[in-house]
Length: 222
Image (cartoon, rainbow, N blue to C red; front, side):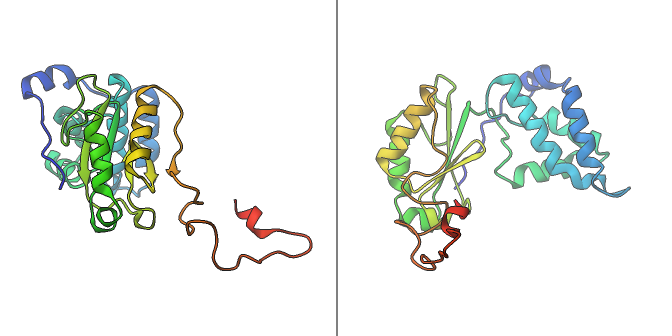
């Protein structure tokens, strides 16, 4: 269900990103990740370093970040591994963007639990706010994609926007969420209804009398 990435012209990409290197701060972070693995196993840090590189590109472009080919090449060289091995990782996981994205990367889950709970309404809310699946809005603010299961089935339907999950969505709450992001207003991460993480709607249905004279365990868990 993921749309094919529209990768920019190679010459343009290399001209802009051919000299990519980790910043001093990110190099320290990269060294920390690599040091977690025994000698000869440093290539195991490839996922962390690709993510770190994508975040650096995002910081430089004021977007969620992406991985131009020269940046993937840099990470591969940093880990002394073939470029294709790093590229295989970058193309396998949807957490890596192979083309430029907006400031907010809206990934709508369209897998069965979310579909049954209203992901079509979530997608309709995006469409009616000018978002086009597989594209970025003209102002560069939003990129929209439909993706496979994001692992919050109990709170379906949900979307992931950059690093955060927004769950229990409806057409109206998704519309309000996009409006808030567009206007720089704070947003509520997680369930968009009165639910504590993945607890039942309306509150606990079992063990709801776990209270003794001195301690309310329900309060301790909040």
